[in-house]
Length: 217
Image 1 (tube, rainbow, N blue to C red):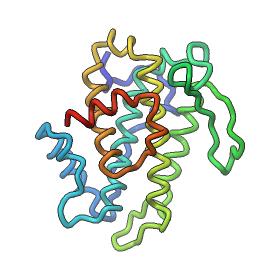
Image 2: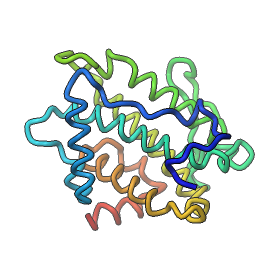
Image 3: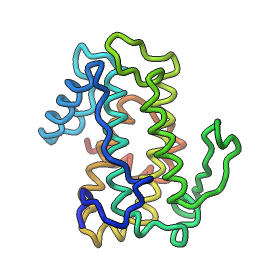
């Protein structure tokens, strides 16, 4: 099974079609830059802000890109990550995540891992589709709280990686997809580290892996 295959039994509400880069700004050009630098094999260079580019534009395009990556990765595991196998959204015995979006669900609630991911992807999509947060038109300014929104998105995407590594890594190995998972997470880690998007305390479930990535690269 490929991480890029679409299984017929996947819940389409959770595994979503890929979102495109913001089109009204420099999104398309920046996406091409990402693809070109990733092709070079140097992930450290791939995450750096290109000279002369706007930081918020760079964060916006990469946020869409990492959202797509996690969607694809988790989509492969959906038949194995169920309310029965994963009744809570956890990353090992010490870390459990509860869901709240501050709007529809204001008080954190305990949900299964697949339900948490469904809530999360719904929430991220609503942020990406909100032009007052992720503007599409050229010249439209980003909101003052843009970086905080991006940080929350990355913090929550990290939790999906943490769950996959702690609860489903052996399945990933059996599918012979661990190299792809590791490359995606390495890219994610270097980007969040470069722009200080996730507080270190949040990284605790995978801190040994993260420190090895950061020190080697």
